[in-house]
Image (cartoon, rainbow over all chains, first blue to last red):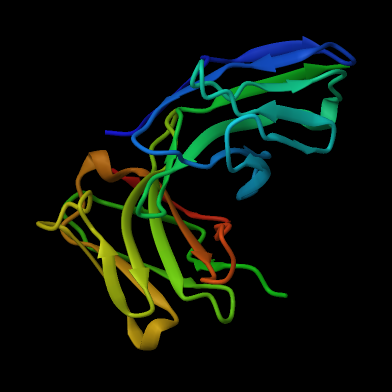
Length: 111
Length: 115
């Protein structure tokens, strides 16, 4: 079945460092891909999405490009802030519409 | 626009007891989802409703879990009897049926602890 694998955390960075969180997927068909973020004490929020190959999703300085050839959707940000500390989830939607999530990567940004 | 509402936010019960969670989706959203998020894992779909009909309940442990969506609006998820491994956050999400991609909006979740 469809699945998502993302790099394990926790990831600890200093403020203004470059961030990469790796995400690869296995799917039948051509799913849409997503990054969700969960800030401490809050619900899941959609961070960005890409609906077809080579699409780049972006929001709040984060970017991810849908790479069909490598089945990847890595999350990047050029300069992280303390306020970016959260758990990040990569996900795809299957043909029925439900979301299939990776296990999550906890990011901690130190001042 | 009000978001997805869930209650209670926290619940602690003994094993073998029963518990129920409530979800009120965003107004007008036809599709409602219940996800289970075990600590350290990503959310996993338990059941998906389209209006008041079940679309997908393939991962719902039907011997102990049940869910309903009355009148295609609010939904309740019940566990009876609870087991230790049911300790998790239960997330409700909803989406509309308009457009080519139906973004799912999540509620704050109910954190269940089974002792």
